[in-house]
Amino acid sequence: MSVEHALQCHDIVVEIFQHLYIPSDLHNADDYGDRLDWTEDAAVRLNLSTLACAARACRTFSGPALDILWRDLPDILSLSRILPHHEGTIDNGYTFALHDPNEYEWCRFMEYANRVQLTHAYGREIHPDAWNALTRRRNKSGSLFPRLKSLHLCWNDDTPLESLSHLLAPSLTLLLCTVNRVAKGILENMMDALRGAVSRQCHTIYLTPTYSLSPRHAALVIFPFWELSQLRALHLIERLAVTSFIIRALSSFQHLRTLSLKVSYIRDRPSTLQLQLLEILEVEVESFEDAASLLVDASLPQLQQAKLKIELGRNQQGTSYIAEIVSALATEHLQSLCVEIENCSRPLEATAFFSPLLNSPQLNVLKLGFLADDDEEPLQVNLRDEDLRSAISAWPLLRELKLTVTYHMRYDYYRKPQYGLPKLPAPPPTIQSLAAFAEAHPRLEVLQLPYVCIPADMIVTTTLTLGSGSRTQSSLALDSLSILDHGLRELEINTWGVLDLKAAQQSQKHSDREGSEGSSEEGDRGNGSEDGVFESEDDSEESEDEGRPPGRIQPLYEFAVVLDRLFPNLELPRYTSFEGWPDAGAPGVRRRLFELLDMLQRGRRVTK
Image 1 (cartoon, one colour):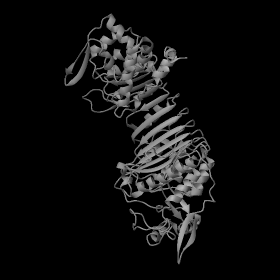
Image 2 (tube, rainbow, N blue to C red):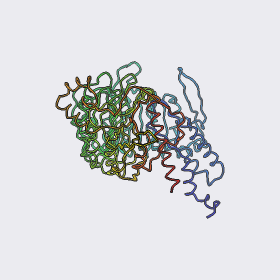
Image 3 (cartoon, rainbow, N blue to C red):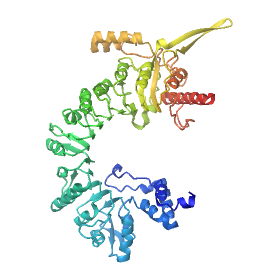
Image 4 (cartoon, one colour):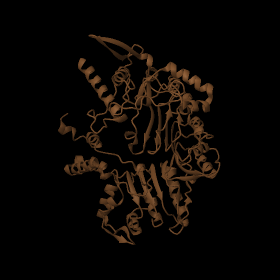
């Protein structure tokens, strides 16, 4: 088939123009009360311009190009401006008013409206008379946008109720409803319209859980979202004080599959959350206690994806609840767990996250992210070697494992460089454990760990005789590591170092005998082999080369050879020139590691 004949085929043209479509995320606006105009993106503007030119080129291109061009509307005004209208300012607010369109103007409007599948309706900018002019030609059950699937509705007390029935099309599947003010008399009619939409196909609603009755009433009223009990997905997009009544209301959703909840505080001990069919849960809280009160006794037997975000304030108590919280989420069907803890200053144990998840065999994504304040000491997250080894056979389907510690404003680039292993209460994961973990998870694609140690017995020291003198040289014995040829694509290890595991194990036993209090007192006086805190060999605070302590703290080239032996298919950063990366500090070391891995991969390709 020639190109000329191919472009006359409707299906081929639709497939070509489909590549120019960049979907907009209706529910990912930073501020749900403001317009989300995705046309500000340069790539989107270029694609829209290309589609507009194609629509004017010929009849074969016109229909498919217009379908994609008008599929997503930033707001209804963008389309309403093709009708006779008036724009002005009333009461310091922008308004848009329509005049009565004639038959030709209305047909032209509906030609484009029939193609719209996503739009934003901002009632505060459209005069009520404009709504009436738009809906006057539609019968009571007619819709302005017959193919509409996603709608962002910003509701105010000056929005005509009649417009709601014309916007909630029968084809609507997703509604983002930002409710600012609703008069008492209108709320019931508004709920009737929403219940009608939910009873058809609209099973997903993003909703502001509170609203005000009028500008004179400062107190907020809870929106009666529990009356939409037929929903399958409910997202409460603003923080809400959770009470026993709210928990009972949420438990009444018998068909709910997805729930997103932001908790400002828990007013009293809530009832037990029971959602037997829930598959996806997203929760934001401000303390460990609130998370425990909400989740520990919850009944979520079908949970498959969970995301928990804890934004800690002054209340840093409750880290002992972590294991119970994770246990409540660790169902046998769990496939993905993401935990984000912000502003935490207390040491955290990875065991509290790993151990409860060992009974979730279908887990394929585990993300543990910790964000610390800039003015705090480096946050200590204790990942033990036994933690990694215990999970070797627990998650055969694992594709992604991330355990990251970051700081506000990229503070990790500017804090004191950390070379070698940090002080830890137990031996960290060894390179052998890392290899065994990767070998047991052939589907693993992304792996991020805070540190990995190289056992001291892997260091082989040889003496070279040079004339009358001699020189000692150290290298890594690689016989203990097999060549995996693993398919891992992304690997991030913040730091590594050499560790004497025998001394570390003796130190741990000594620490356990003395007890936590006595051990901490000795730790202030002793060294890494006596105080229960393990450090990499030759640790020193003095700097010789860009702040790097002397000795074999981080055997850079040897570690790169080990990683290349285990993971030869790593996708290194595209910017392999590493322009803009710091030359000193921990980022500088990672930069040099990536450079070495890049050279090893290039050399292997040349030899092939």
